[in-house]
Image (cartoon, rainbow, N blue to C red; front, top):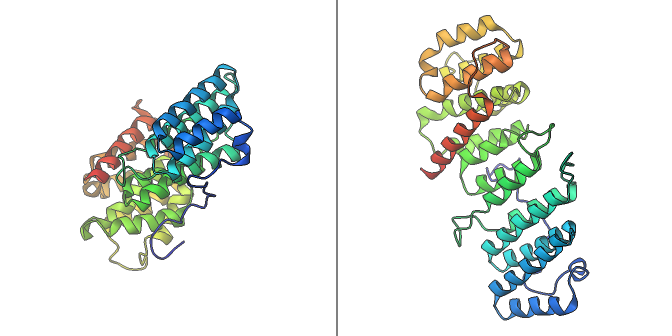
Length: 322
């Protein structure tokens, strides 16, 4: 992990900014149409070129040639992104996802292939951040891709897409949103580095709560292993000291309670650290979810994990905006 605190730069082969199309794209387009699109782009008529590409896309889709339609959108999406036309690139990216979805069996959708994941990530990283230029929200594209990538093994979406989104948010210093994706990556070292960076923009008194909140979230996901590695190795805390802050004490002991599924210890922690848990209203929700999912105690039905994380992501977005 880089000591600078910056997320690792994505590695992707960039297309030519405005030169001729790649060989694979030439096989997709009739020469006359290809020349027309290229002529419009070279003349600066990018919006007309974009409309022409969309027309071709719908023709492919009407002929049930979904993979050709997806490749068409990928190629021109990258080209428009290289020209700084991120709105057009994102639009074609969304159409690319529609084509990929159309190519899958409705009864039993197949997981996204490695090539498809790589292409999605490449186009996502090629687009500028929303606050850099044009106000384009490329995260709508990656969120749609995450939804498309859900499987029984990855109910929240593929880890490669989460990592791409996390790295992009991290680079923009939108730490709450970055954490909202990194929690699914099972990478305690990277997650810890991101939180250390996030701490630098927070109040000193709040820093222990960054780790407690993260621990609670990971335990809600039943990822006790990552939570343990984060709290033991990521915080930089001297656990032999008698001055460990109360939120960190609670985080460590909660990991122990979950690791050994100890109802007795869990109940004791709720009583002894009730003032810490009252610091944030979401802590009680996390504790209830942990009690049900990890400790195994049956409780009355609640909104469930999906509802809890919807609230979590909304709160993180608010933190970033603030």
